[in-house]
Image 1 (cartoon, rainbow, N blue to C red):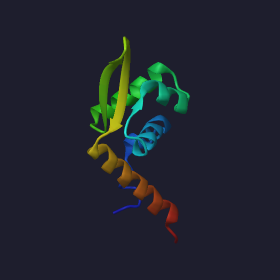
Image 2: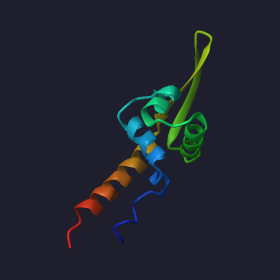
Image 3: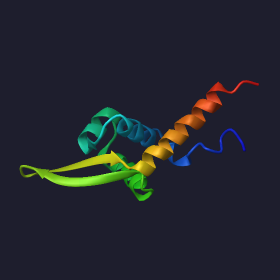
Length: 98
């Protein structure tokens, strides 16, 4: 088995990497917080969130605060496990000595 076999291609993009990193240390995060932390546009963020949601890595919860819509995101068990495996694979690669 190669050193890069467990690196998850889905996390190759910096925005998806950022989304999952944020969700690993927070129970849930709303759309605007992601936008502020990652400094991305609505469309760009929405597209990456949709990719992670399709894969089953994040859960989307829509609600209203007063009359304002609020969308919150959280990492699923599958998403957390996949991200941990990805990070562990990167650590092995970084720490590999010849």
